[in-house]
Image (cartoon, rainbow, N blue to C red; front, side, top):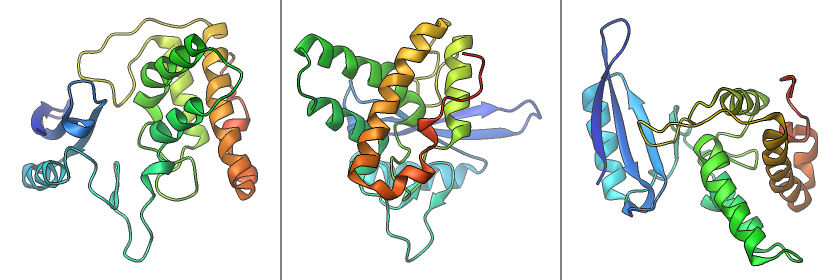
Length: 195
């Protein structure tokens, strides 16, 4: 069940974070949304609980419900689901490699990009998202969707480049499925991070 955690900001004002595991399972990835108002947090918590521990249809993380008339992003275009489907359909790789790729997605990509879109619908991944991800990996910081209290270690430039290669492949697959994404694909270019 989704629950609310009250946090104190540096200003002393409270914020209210709704936390839950996707699908309500023990192994589901942690999801969160933060509000300034406790009543809004309670309403959102109730929506999550009413939708089986999933993001409410039409809700864009950090923004709320999409504008009326704008079609919601299909679940199949959410990064985490798309990336898992991509790895599941790869040929000419061993099951060991498939297992490793799945683990990399769960541990090193989804906590940053899981609910973002591989398409132009919904909240799509931008160059800023990629730069923040690289900086977090370099500094050993957890992603925004990691469970509270998660600790990580800094990664070497080679490890980050390998993870970026997997990220690139996922998005190359999305471009092949929809060539109109090519001009807007920010993943194709490595962020200027010094890595």
